[in-house]
Amino acid sequence: MKHGLIIADRDIPFLAGVLENWFDVRYLPGREIGPEDVSRAAALVVRTRTRCNSFLLEGSSVKLVATATIGTDHIDTDYCAVSGIAVASAPGCNSAAVAQYVSTALRALALDRPGATLGVIGAGHVGTKVAARARAVGMRVLLNDPPREAAEGPEGFTPLTDLLAQSDIVTVHIPLWRENRDFADEAFFASMKPGASFINASRGEVVDEAALLAARPRLGRLVLDVWKNEPAINRDLLAAADIATPHIAGYSIQGKINGTQAVVRAVGDFFDVPQLRNFFVRDVELPQIPYDIFADDAALRSHPENFERLRSNYSYRNDQLQ
Image 1 (cartoon, rainbow, N blue to C red):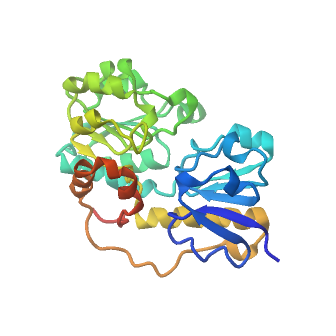
Image 2 (cartoon, one colour):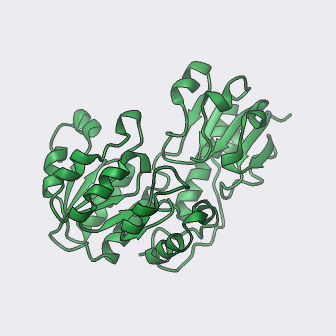
Image 3 (tube, rainbow, N blue to C red):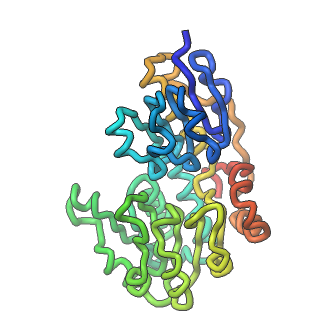
């Protein structure tokens, strides 16, 4: 007997055929999943493109939302908690890929100079790996992470204002919470060292884009992978960036494998399907081509209207190559 219906984002790689022995599975474009689709579903398996809120879930039979992503900002976790809907994510699944993206951008723009100071805001799975790569090439690294500092003590962490004043490059790796919207605002950019570079590969909503554009003449290099209002991104900001990519910093084969494994295992745990609890994606050939970040930049600049298509059709990288 099957455990019910699962609605799944059709663009989650390596998922097709995995759940079908135990569930009826319907694959849909993530942005198009609506209330009628989920009304009789037992679970949703999604990415960031599906907004899992009361509009989508009210009156449905959904008991689990599993997202193949690090963040859960596309899920109303408060509503889910009150409604008895479990939420599972894939923390750290693509952290190596984002670290590869940042280190590639630094190298491509000749910013990875020994002795240069990199300020890392958010020292979680991603920020920790970014810091390690920077230290490996001789960069000085400052870390800012108030939650970790509160738990671990001040040693090894730098107050935000000091980090901004001292850093030659600032890179943001914080989750999107309500209090983090427009985190990088006018005061933030005014506090940055003149000529310092700025990188955002976390979420577009953590940056006040108007403040960033106003500050642009005082900044050094600008690298943006994430944007407000995706896929309808700010064209002025696109033109102002030195490297601009369509939210693909975490798009490595290894990261996608990790994310898919995490959601399948979450489904197995929740519905007590032992065969899914230790699911592994196997026999995947890894590409051996070093990452060309400027190819991703050129693709977005040539056709910014194809933002979503560029993501959906992306050729996943090997995050162990430079």
